Each structure stands twice: as structure tokens, then as C-alpha cells.
Length: 255
Length: 235
Image (cartoon, rainbow over all chains, first blue to last red):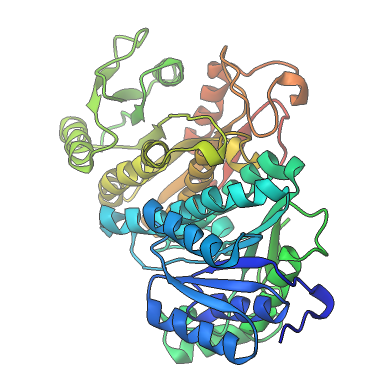
């Protein structure tokens, strides 16, 4: 049963990358609840299939696709799969990303290259291959997921930070290119969310301690990030494009 | 350490490098120049020692940097200014062109810094300056790959600044608007109408901004981006 709700998107199709867990899964669930038919693109098929099952269990429509966003052929396959099953692409969330940690002086080039390929090139490739469908209908919405690190540059996360800064510039550039075609492209910069990601490099004790230092005193719930993405991808967003929207409980206040 | 201040410029061998080298020599710096896939640049002052570097190859970068360090015994400052622009709509951008743009504009900066910084760490002093472009902040109409790479450079430099501060090293960026005779479209700007000063900047003016960051009294500046753009973009 399609709920529709305030942001009824019946018939519209969204691709969310990296949606097998965490923020991506929350976004996929929210978009499905808003009436989108959702393709869950994930490097690992099993968690993607799990999210798709959760969505269909709620009476909505979702499919899983095993995708390596850094591989153009894989991205082309993802889009062909989406159009083959659902006929179109109306919305894209570039959420897939990896988050390894190294000092610059110790960092293997292969690690740098992998982060740039998944986090930044992956977003470029997904945008490139969904655009034809959006341009046909002169309508589309894209959200690229960045991070506060895009602006502050994180020690031991220079590659991650550079890739996210690249995402912001990619968003602005594409927004300029397609603005006259009814396609709106924005960046969402989440702060710290209560998912597995902050726990990759930090102990649970430190994660909880750092959370209290966020002005709102806690990490974001994934649904709170999904809420903002849902707006940016909806028909209610009619004039916002090329922007960075930060959702971080007051942790960083961009000028 | 000798009183001589050694600056290593790593670039493409064009007017940008020549202007920088000239300004630095005039200020009394000992200048070393490494040119991507070249060995020198026309107009380089005779006092400048120049050699080749392949910015797409980490082993070549390591070797070239080590040769400079072995000869000069110290590396006070690094100016890294790779430049490779591709133009075209994102939907038409080829994967290989994207890769080359990122590799030459962004990955090269990481690799050069990776191999220069250890020398600065052993000196417990150093200044790293990277050149970037305001396209990184304005977004590039028909220049997404270039804008993404240049934005990456600006934030990379901040991460670097955080990592090396405890070692007495600073890292800053000089970000350029429209400079020189060839006016490359920048962001949504395709001509000089958005520039308050109604003209392109000169490479000598860029060199002066770099010199400012290298001045001994500029030691408290780190993690910053100085925009040299005649008022085109105000962050």
C-alpha cells in the first residue's frame, strides 16, 4: 500500500546507493513510505536485499541491486536494471562511501585512490547515468551526501575529506548545468549519526562521550537525516539547487 | 640548517611556475623547480635548478623529491601547483578523462605532500602552499571534474594542516580566479563581468600572495585559503 502522505510520489522511482545499512537504509525506507519505488544499490547484495524485503513487507515497492559505484559498467547496469523494472529514474541519492583512516605520510596510494573512486567518482558516474532519464522528462532530484569533513578537513581523513569536498563542488557544477531542465541537485552534510559509521574508528565509550558535546547533546537518528533528504527529493522542493544543507545538531555552523 | 631558504616548486612548467620562481629568486630564496613531464620552463631564471617529475607516478615523485632533498639538505617550503583542465558537460564526461583530471589536479598534491612532508617533519619546520582554483568553490559550469578536484585540494590542505601542525609545519592554499591572458570560464562566470576589478589577474600578483604566505612573519597562518580573484568570489 503506497502511503503517499504529504509528499506523495506515486509512480516515481528513486535509486539510493549504499542503502544496505545506516543512513542509506533509513533514506530508502523513508522514500518508499513517501511513495517512491526504490532501488537499493549496495556493494553487498545481502543487506540490500534485506532492506528491500523490509520495504516490500510494508506494502511498498523496492528492489536490490549489487553495485560497485566506482565501476562505470556496474553503474550502467544499475540504471538499466532500474529502468528495466520501473521504467524511469526520478531521484538519486549518492550515499555510498567508505571511511578508512590514515595519516597522509603513511597512506598507501591504493587507499587514496579507492576512497576517491567510491566516494567521488561513484557519485559522478551515478549522476551521469541517471541524467538521460531525468532530462527526457525535464524533471529530477539528486542529493549527494557529503560530511562536515568536506569543509573542515579531518586529520587522518584527508582522502575522505577531499572526496566529500569534491562532492560539494560536483553538486554545484551539475546544478548549474541542469537547472534549466527541471533537475535540482543538492548536497546534504550530515553530522554524526547513530549508525555503525562513527564506531568504525572510535570506541563506544568515546562515541557516547563525543555525542554529549554536540550542541543538541546527541547524535542524529537516521530518520532525521532521511527527513531532510525526503524534502530535497520531493516535489515540495521547487527552487533549492546547488546548496549544502547541513543536518548536525548544531555541531558545525557553516557560513 | 643553513640560512638559505629553499623552496621547491612542483608544477607544469608554464607562466605560473616562471612567475613564482622569478618572484622567489628576487626575494632571495633558493628555488628548485620540478616540471611535470618536462625538465624546465622557458624564462626560468638561471639560478633556478630545474628537473623532471611525473605527477602521475608515485615512485617518480618519491625519487624526484628525494633527489632535491639530498642535494639541498633542507626543504623549507613547498609550492605545489599542478594544473589540468577538462571541459564538457558532466553527462558527456568520459571515465578516463575524469580519472586524469582527478589524478593530475588532486592525487598529485597528495603524493607530493606525502613525500615532502617527512623532510619537513625532521626539520621541525616547513611551509606548504598549494595552488587551487575558485572553480572549486563556485562550481564549474561544464567543468565538474575540475571543480571537484580543486575543491578536494582546498580541503586536503586543511586536513594536512591539522596533521602537521604539531611538527611546526603550516599548510595553506592560494586559490585563483581568472589569471593570465587565457580567460578560462570559472563557475558560472565566462567573462570578466563578475570581476570587481574588471580585469584578469597577473601571475606576478599571484606570486605576491604566495610570497606573503612564505614571509617569516606569516607563521600563524595555517589551514587557510587566500583567494586571488579581483573580487570575483567572496567566501
